Structure formats: structure tokens, C-alpha cells
Length: 430
Image 1 (cartoon, rainbow, N blue to C red):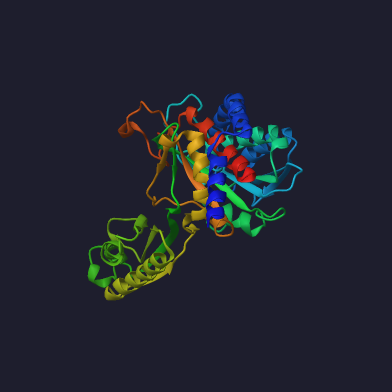
Image 2: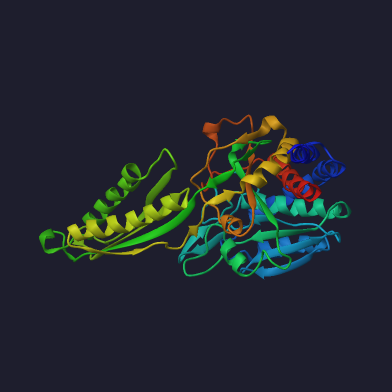
């Protein structure tokens, strides 16, 4: 028992104390900071939607090839994967960044704002990096630069994964982390552990947030089609009104969480985000479509909510003389983003040393979702948050993710590079 204690203590001391390699990380992160910011601005000005990141992939691949890394493109459609081989035996550590943007018209006012237009679901839309994937890609490009310069001090291999379609592949297409895993991104060489980072617009620059276990929710989109009977709006008794039925279904779904979910254990969310039906004021249509999202933090709750949504939709419709077709999942379907407990405990000293213990904050789970979870289903992994908010800016004036005014302070990028680099160095050195 004493030997085991001493082994753990020595390992912890090695990781929590500065090493020559970690000092090199700091120097190189400083050296490449301007490059990382420039890469981020370029990617931000040229955003591309999920599974359409053609130019973004070319831009990233060109940089990786300039580092003399082994580069593979067209992974899961538009993904890029590069391998850094130290030439010495050791683990294979993967680092992941997502690279897709969102169908949002940017109004942030930054000098490098996007003016790109594209087509989404058959409609012309603006395109914007409104979630920070531009920063993720740039930080991983910077991390590749840092670790390549430190190649002689590494043991094992580093696999850099630039992933498309985190926001969800277009309906009817495969994509994202799930497709990357299916295509074997965690093999050849087989990955031992994976790390990922997400920037956060409402967390101060210089801060790292972490949580062991479930850190982000599972997501399942759904589509409910309510089938009724059309009639003139002046004679509703001749109809089976799918609009009234759909309205009751929306209200009924709210009791899935408020009256069925044991919320002192885990949170859950059922949200209807889209309703489509009819085209005139005086016509009751024959059908209405509801599209929404389910968020849960464990598998039991996920199973229960799925069953409840199907049951409520069917039974409420039946009571109104209507029928329903429920597609669940419909499009997005991500597991819980789950940070391995043992790995979190081992790497927490790295975070303390990198950001300063006072700047490393334990966080509650959030109901946002991440397809990084597909990697974590196969191998141990950690997903962390780094701050992107100017500390002097009031939180109330800070735009959230997926909004037109979303802004990230470039000063937050260097900590992301240092964190990813130190996670690799310390995992290899331990």
C-alpha cells in the first residue's frame, strides 16, 4: 500500500511540477500566438457549413504538410488527420478540433467578420463561425506547430484530428465524429486517449473549466407529423384539426420533464423548436410537423424520455381523432459527453500547472451537446472548456454561442494551445 501511495505521489509531483518540455511549450506558444490568431481570422472570414468545409480543409492540410507531418484528407467527407511520430515507443494521443460553421448572418462587428452566403435546407443563408470552431481549428494548428518543434522530447505519436460536421450533417447525410470513428480514425495507429477543447464566450480568458463524468448532454432530435383531416376554416367540425392537436402535444411534452424526470439526479430538456402547418387563415390543413430536441445526461433518462415523447404524441393525437408519425432520432443523435474519471484525476495537475490552480474551475454539466462523445465511447477522453471572454466585459453584455453577435477574444487562444500541448507532453511523460 505504501509503495502504491508513493508511486501515485511521485507521478502527481512529476505532472504538477514544471518540466523542461512544459517550459518549451510556453516559449513556443508565445512564438506562434500571432500565427494562431491569423489562422483563426482567416477561417472566421471564410466559414463553411457542415460536410462542405472544402476550402477550410485545404487551408489546414497545407499548414500540416508544411510541418512535414503525414497528412490524410477527405476523412468523413472533408476531415483532415495528421500524425506526428516521435520515433520513440509510447502512447498514441489524439487531439481533436471541429471545423464547421453555422447558418447565421454575422452582426458581431469584428474587423474579420464573415460576409459569406451559402445554401442550407434549400434556402440562402449567411454563414458564421458562431460557436468558436474557427478558434478550435486554429488552436490545434498551433498545437501541431508546438509539438512538431518538440518532436525529440516526445514519446509515441500524436494524431491531430480536424473534424467536419460537428453541428450535424445535413439531413440524409452521414458525418462528424460518428462517421470518423466508423471510418477508423482511432486506428492505424490505434489511439490510446483523446483530448478536446471548446472555447466559451462567457468564461473569462485565462480560465479552464472541467468536470469528471458527464459534462455535456446527449442530444436526440425528433420529428412528429400530426395527421388530421383538412376542411374550410369556417367549418372546423368537418376537420380533424392537426394544429389544435399539435398544440396540445407541445404542451403535453412539457410534462415529460416537469412530472416524469427525477430532476434531483439529472437534468433533462424537451424542446419543440419548429412548427410548420397550413398556408391560409381560412384553411385547416391536413397535417402539421413538429421538430424538436431532447437533452439528457444519462442513458436511463434518455430511454425514458424517448418512450414518453412517443407515448404522449400518439395518445394525445388519438384523443383528438388524429394520428402521428414519430421519427426519433431525427438527424442529430449524440451520446453524453463523458470525461473518464481516472483520466481526469491524472491530468488535473496538468491543468493546474498550465492555467494556475486558481484559474481552473470545476463546472456543472451543461445541456449543450458534443459529438466528441462518439470518440469517448471507444477510448478514454477528456473534453474541457477554455475562456474566450474579455475579463473586463460584463457578462450581461456577452453574446452566447450560436448567436449573430458571438465574439471571442483572441487573447484566449494561447491558453488553448498550451493546454493541449501540455496534456500531450504530460500524458507521454507520466
